[in-house]
Image (cartoon, rainbow, N blue to C red):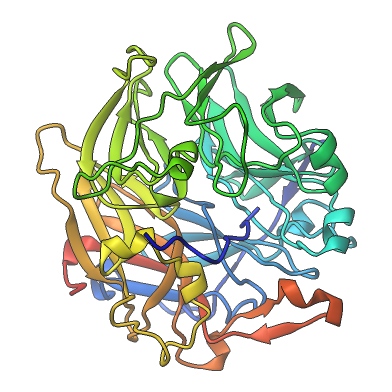
Length: 484
């Protein structure tokens, strides 16, 4: 099996700020009535680079909130511009930029410490959305000057931002966040990027009290290594379940471990080597020892009631190609807590639950998900590679226990003007069959192209290059069923 050759680069005091958003002029002109949803095509996209040329990608950082709107971010690798935060109303198709630069919300616009990414889930509690910022400028000077990742909240009714400040000075958050609605606590995964902090320390789990803003170190998870945890599952007892992502790092004592922080005991507990051994779509068992060591959740979401959660592992998390239910009330060490739902192929961050269906994005041939990285393919000239074969498709599967668990292919993702998606790492869905994606797409003109800072050319000075791709947000209405 050909493994991915190009590594993935990370998309990662209390103040209340009121920020007036503006509406993208591409979509809604002043005094022009907004069309109704039925008048829009099944895939309707919005160009992000017509607003800001330096937005160059997005990983996680998207949700459908209780007000029915989709909230999402747009990220950079820039030393001069931070992440944007947006709202999309699916009832009117109105797109609003809530802030163009998250660095300003964090009060750091005068520094080289750009808050260039919202590379975390966006979670909701009591009318507020919560998310974290993440390091974006990966050159040496950027890492050395990074102040640290912030936790930010946004009140949907008023449009106010609240900055909880840096959680751990000079550490980023990569990338999980979740909220306990009973105890009113946030949990985040804090990660060092500065060499001396990586060598002397490691990753930590933190809690934040929403009312007071008090931050508490709950324990160290790695030693002498960076790390990542993309998703937290909070069960109905307030326990925080998570895994460590190990694609880029090796942890001597982690081979498919599952971790849980129990607030009633104030301790982190480890279940060693318990995650299911992988299988491919055809039922072939994963026997590669490296993959077995890398077992981790790459997507997880609680089911209604929080008694159970869904999760996937995929090629980026040990090779398994199935959708699972985790039930913490059952015996974990004996494997009884893990129930297979369906065989869906390899998936990664581009996964979301909407109603009773799980939606995800894969190459036209789902087997290619094991071998090819869409983040590297997005940089290639579409005329020089087989994009007819490497088109991205939207797929879904029912999670209904009594439903049909075969995968439905909704077809190639192409928008109203024929642009095709080239990379999707940010996806959300609602219970009405609408799927929201953010990613890199083909462009129709240079006005839509992204101007990305080239990370590996920093010794030669500041180098920004106009790419042959652009960043787009899109709403996909699967109820129209015409993506073929």
